[in-house]
Image: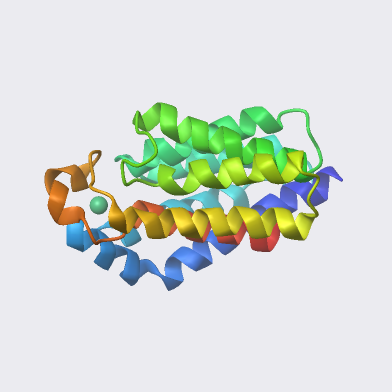
Length: 211
Ligand SMILES: [Mg+2]
């Protein structure tokens, strides 16, 4: 099973990259409204680097944990600014929680989502409601935990997770930014989606489509 789990994660990162490429201009437009307009480019560079790093990995020999730690290193190498350390920390935590596990069952997916969201939260020192990517990752992780606790099917698990992510991203339009660059414009950020939350919802969807 180890080959297929590692390969599934590599496929997930390819899908993430493709989703970001498709929406790159849109993400930069969202960022332009409340930030410096580079979010689409930044995420594009980051996920291209992730896939380049994974291309150098032997997926027949690699564990799921190694795929995640390689992705973390690739992202951080390419993106030094805010988003880089946030996702690198999230992915590294995911690598830790997957250590010794060869299967991506729903419990593993739940733990991976929890580890990612906690890593991003710890690194960014943000909370829910701060109008950041955490407004997607935290509710997605919670929905995953609830779905496993309720014994949901795989289909229902991912439906709940993506719904929580999409709702979280949409809710950022009603929030005032207090963290990151958007905090400089504060009230003016009201009515605008947070670009980091919008891209996070795309990543969660790519996860759901693959896993
Ligand atoms: Mg920016």
